[in-house]
Structures are given as structure tokens and as C-alpha cells.
Length: 162
Picture (spheres, rainbow, N blue to C red):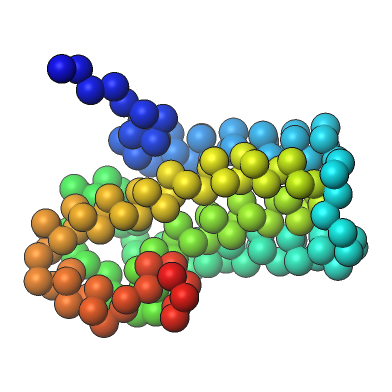
């Protein structure tokens, strides 16, 4: 029986440079939808717009911070040589993915468009799945060391929440 690859499988197996290109396309889609479909509006503008900008800037900052600590973050998981448990990784296991998810979630607020929320959910989902699959792989690769890390840092994304 032939197993069909899902869009998520294709994204997860893409090389890091291809993922960056996918991210750029996704940001472009979010901007286009925000400009082309401004209604229905999310209320409380301009405060909500500022909140969106804070999410985007904060998300990029968090993503960058994760790369300062984890220099191999854009390598394929198979090529990662050591487990990173310091810095931001001592508080959450996937700060880079959380940063990108925050960027996505900032767009609906920047454009105050409910329609932008739909692709945001579609774009954020593969990052969540990738984090779960990476953890399965890292448990196999690092064994007890990664399991101890999970016990020490039980939060995938947001400390004390998720």
C-alpha cells in the first residue's frame, strides 16, 4: 500500500532553506489577505494593532534568541550533535517555533481582520506537529538525557501553560 504524503509531511521534510522560503510566502499570503479582505474587523483598533505589532516583533525576537543559544536549530534533527538545555531552552523546549507562531498570530491583530486568522491556524499547525515529531526523534536519539530534559522543562511552548 502506497502512503500518500500530507502537506504537513512535505513541510516537515523540507530543508531549512526551503522552510524559510515557505515562511516568506506565508507572510506574503497573510499580508495579502489582510489588505484584500479587511472585514469583518477585530474591534478596539488602534490598540489591537499595537498588540499585533508586539506579537510580531516579540515573535521574531524570541525566534532569534533561540538561535543565539541553539546554533544548530536550522539543521535537520539528524545532524544535531548535542542537546541544548541552557538559556531560553531552560524555560521552554521549543522557543523558536513559539516565536514563529507568535509572528503568525500577530497578523490578524495588525490588520484587524478576522479572515487573516484562518491561514494563521493553517500555518501554525505544522509547527506544532513538527515540535511533537522532533521530540519523538530526540527521545530516540538522546534517550534518557532528553527524557530528563522533558521532566526538568515540561513546557513545549509557554511555561506553566503548554
